[in-house]
Length: 277
Image 1: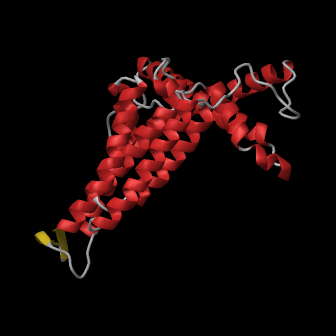
Image 2: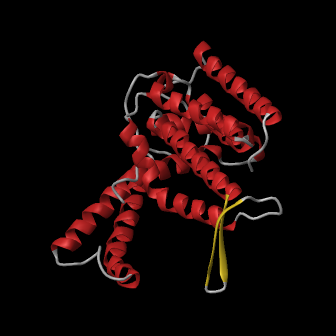
């Protein structure tokens, strides 16, 4: 499970998504999150899912990496789907299956199944598109892009540069902490620790020897990073320059036009077809 977490990793390439301006990628990712919640029927959801698949194909990122990013939340997605299947009720629901267990009536309704499918597809699309943002953008470009987008808040005395750096460092060190956790777990197993069997309480207790050195290592890395940044005279204040300048190019506006057309199509499909949820 820990090996399957790929948040914050960058996949080098020269695909259309890699060449897109980082600011535009952040804006379009946020716009996609809004658009997918505007979907009210499977036709609209299918269009947004098709857009996510198209972006994944154009990114050049292997499908295994994208699917691996969905693995950590798979249990949560399945749990949400089961809840929707059994607990979606209403005055006009169509019951497909009904069973009474210990004075509790379990019902599987058509609306519940449709809602579970709808929610599952929506969450998986959100994870895939969000993962593409970090897969196709380096941490330094993410920092610069967030700083430029939040620049108007600097007039309100908001430390934009510090905030952008904090967000990027958090994303950057997720893979590092995962590798450190895996290394500590292997070291504990070589000493006879049993981390994968037993009851839930036993497994939680067995994981305590992993958490303690992990926290110590994380704080040590944070102190080393702070010292390195201070030795390079980083303060987060004043105007900053960047090695790679962000420039909006014609194809960036093409991506923006495609997102606008997708939004218009979703609104039209919501109007002409019956809502599912």
